[in-house]
Length: 295
Image (cartoon, rainbow, N blue to C red; front, side, top):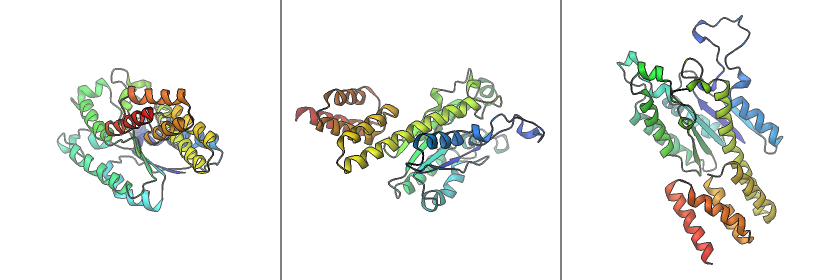
């Protein structure tokens, strides 16, 4: 599995004072092995030990925008031939720029259009999945200096969230974790960049999605080899790691019904009915549940 991170400076190592960095400093605020991409790469390798082989390419760039990612998307999707694309851009796009008279580098309409272009090209690689990392809110201090910036961050995140179908595209909600009134649990004192704990958090969220995908894909391979017992174990493990994955929910519902695993079937059915999944897909799953229950 080849994973590519297309991110901004949040995905890179960072000194404590980037504008006044002295090479004699012995410690970085975030070292390379503490970045979320390095953590994901190391921990997935430790877990799977080469089966499947995991390769992570970090193409994060300082001052990167979704426009910049879109300019390289052909390389990422078709020449690097990635299986998972992690998209982590937005704070550079949405920030109010004094040099632009308070405007953004990429406004909301443009941001949505660039994202739709990425998704359009992604559809030509149906086995490639997209993980979108939401923009972190900033501090109340920054909100005071740039009134309305946290609402703007929320607006841009809504664009990302709307495009997550939980089948081929997934969204990580950073607003659920980073709070403006105490941001330094996950952010550095510059009010923007991830600290060590913030990198651990993003890595944990990305890794959960990828692990869920891997175990579900393994389950499909086992099912195709007519090993239903091992297949349902892998589908169940995927569900325990990342229950929102629509394709795995479908596979688990159908196979648990076929194998007369009633307790498991009802557990998954209850999850589908109680959780706010992508609306159209959730209705499809509920229709499947209704059909299977009446057979």
